[in-house]
Length: 399
Image (cartoon, rainbow, N blue to C red):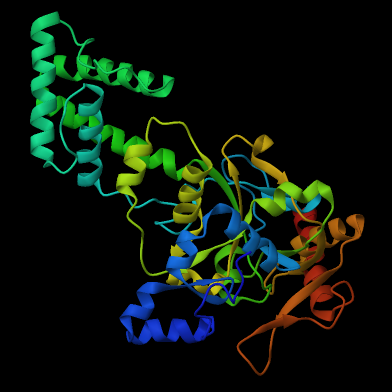
């Protein structure tokens, strides 16, 4: 199990590290460490841990309570209020990271030029060409192009240049797809070199999208009082926040095994060679973990304030992209929530026997805190509800 004693370097807390980063000092420390669940870890230790050790670490560190912020508005496309549905059903929606607010979210760092080079090298190998991967992209490209020309002149088609036996069905399908694309692009008045380059460029774009959308993700945090989270994810305090409490019920075994803390750091790991060579190969646990750790679970240090935990599953795993999550044990109502929406949420909570509480501003500190009064008997709520009733009555009268 990965614990503090094994991963050396827990000498600073997260706030101190962020201050160090802001000040721009001790660059080597900045680049070699990361924040995970509010703790400082050596990035090298995290990257080399592997799936099993990091899973043990995550299970050992999993908070008893996790929180999720909801905007509580109706989706313009579907007409559904997914926030209320999640509250009623105790489900969480698994989303594509492409919908998240971080432009880097879940994106694997693949250098285009390097990817192009290693794809050329891979195709040269499938043609039976004896050429080293240390050769330049021009040398690899020229060798591949010449081989295709020679094959075409001999067989008068584009179906014989991959002479090496395919290692797998995936590789065979990849070869057939390349041949088909080459026929199309070469017939579109492109030169052979240009056609090959175009196909590999498209491979790069499609592969990047594929890697980024392999998983569906749901995000959680460790505090219901973050002003930034209320502002960003709960419609500027007009939504609500749900508290989930960890349960050892076997029903949640898969949840526990797919829930990990986010790794916040300053560097993006270049995995171009690794994933270029993994393309068209059978998927392994190692492949998936590299994709998870360096995509879904890796974010810029700028987001460390979120102290995020992520539940992720392969695309298509969750029925209708919904999963049952740990039991809801409390609901926090936003400071700016309308009387009508507050009443709606409270009614759901009463029906489900879920405690609820309002969140208010601390009068002395720039912090949010629980309200000491029951929302139903609160004078402020009653005043807003009476105002709403008067408006509704006036509207009905004039209708």
